[in-house]
Image (cartoon, each protein chain N blue to C red):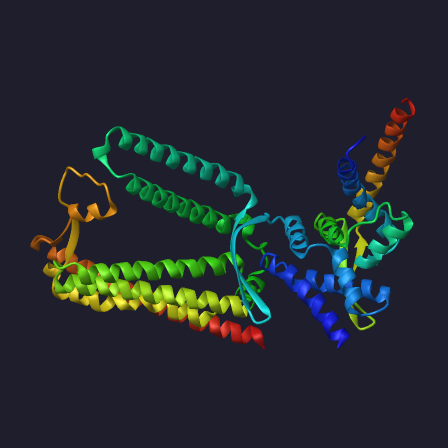
Amino acid sequence: MFDKSIIESWISEIKRGIIELCILALLRKREMYGYEISKELRSLTSDILAIEEGTLYPLLRRLTKRGFLEEEWRIVDGRPRKYYKMTDKGLQMYREMKVLWFSITDEVSKLLRGD
Amino acid sequence: MENRRAIEIMEDYLKKVQENLPEGLDGDIIEELRSHIIDMVNERGGLTVENVEWAIKRMGDPIKLAEEIAREEGYLKRKRIFEINLRWGDKTYRWGFELNEDIMEIFTSILWFIVIIVLFTSLGSIVYIFSTPQSGNIVDVLVNSVGSLISLLVFLFISMWLLSILSPENKRPVVRRIIKRKEKILVRRTSYVKTGGMFFSGFFLIIIAVFIGWFTLSYSSFTFVTRIVGLSLAIAFAYKGSILVAHSIYMAFEGKESLAINFVGSLSILVMIPSLILINLYPSQLQVPIIKSTYIEIKRISDILKYVEFIVIPLQYSILIQFVSIILIVAIVLYIVLKAATFTREKKIYEYLST
């Protein structure tokens, strides 16, 4: 019998690390606004990587502050919307994170396969 | 009707987020959050109360959201220790005291330390009284212990709170000077800490003023000059305290500081000028407190007065007193002139930047 809250906490910690990579992966394809990013994450990952709206914006601000994303306000259908675009630095970071991700998952998979 | 109510719910939520963001940070984040909520609501079928409530539930607790955003910007999270909520009609006004999260641990440790020290010294006194019944009164010990504890806690809290609000992490990021100036003048946002601090500072100043006034009038051995000085001090404190209380109420209602009230509050020091002139004309009439005994035994607070005596300034110090009083009058006048100039300049900048 395991404590569900421990599992949930573990999942939450894993997601926290992965979501940044996923956001960069989405913005690698094209620029998006906040709600679009949240929707794409939900639909492309079958809700597994669904992110709380309240978590998304602090993450986007963090990535922007670090220079990985650029933001731009535009008026769309008469409403202001902030679009996010990946920078060159962000692209470099994304490539490094992607390589690291595959090597980490490979090693963990090897370990789990041996069990 | 439904649309208006839905918009109200959304704006209330955004207002709560905004209120909990540090100064200067709430600019486009609120606009972005508004856009996000509208997108969510539109996808669900339009601007209805049900859809907005669903959307803001998905957004999460507004205070936590504001804290997370502030944390990403490098601001420390604050823990609210003490809050007063006043409901007036359909609005709620809040004043609160908060401490930075890095100070909380120190605060808690010192708090426990103070409680334990006061507890042990009180117990020690009570045990002593039981063993030597003529030595004192248990009720006095308890009253003094509670009084000491409250005073120490108030001092601790005020100093920790000052550390919190003065810490560099609470300052806005460095921006161009004109924007910083604009933010300072145009968007003088208030925080609960500032509003609460002003209210309680004003309240305490009024209490001190009442005490000084009562003491000045009731102590029979005061000269005319000393009484005028004492009453002037009491009036100055009462004036400043009232202005602080009024300003905090203004800030709670308007959400920003008032240049005019700030300036009017700084005029409290003018009350001291007549008494300084009197001191200059009759320096030998001014009295000062001295401790008249080398041996002091204090069992009650009122015992302190037995050992304090007010004596007139010796004649040989008259010239010094006159000189100091002139310096103080000049300093006060210069201070008021500087304050008036600052107020006028800030008002001009405000008017210029508002257009």
